[in-house]
Length: 122
Image (cartoon, rainbow, N blue to C red):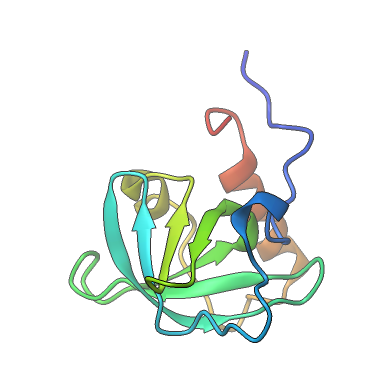
């Protein structure tokens, strides 16, 4: 049986990601899953313990926006304005739907963090 990674920290940028870089705003950066591009960042936070990005997927998922916990970001490439995720397009596509009214709700965030950190992701 596969279990979640006990070191998974969904709501903080991983130290190895290279973010936060001094004075860098991720809004407008292109987002790359492990198997291709998924869109551009519409919103980004860098609050300790509560960081996330919202990605406008454009035509990839018919204009849907997705909320990604900062922990799924593997690398921030400031020079090329790209954010590389450590998840696949299908993993993102199958995530719980983004709900702007619920993004600060603890149950919604627990569910989203649990989805991305659950069995099969590590």
